Length: 84
Image (cartoon, rainbow, N blue to C red):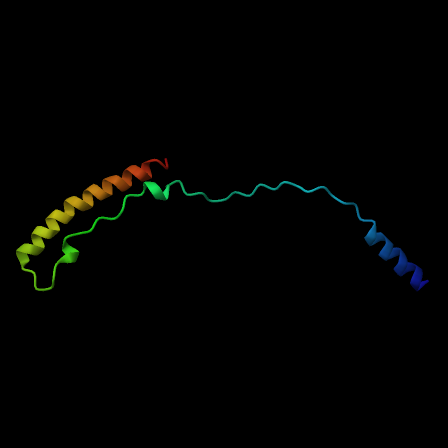
């Protein structure tokens, strides 16, 4: 009796219906910013100053860097605006 029951159970495993493949759609994050459109970061004059630079040189470099930074910020905002 035990062997008949085991044979019946094993026969049931071999006769399982074969299901066709199913298509499952999974959301994947895609960046809206193209890496080719991102402007390169500017080289700031303040970073090139030596520790021995005078206060006036530092102020002039910071003033020039502020304008450079604002221009770079505008370019980045234009790239980000494409995501909306």
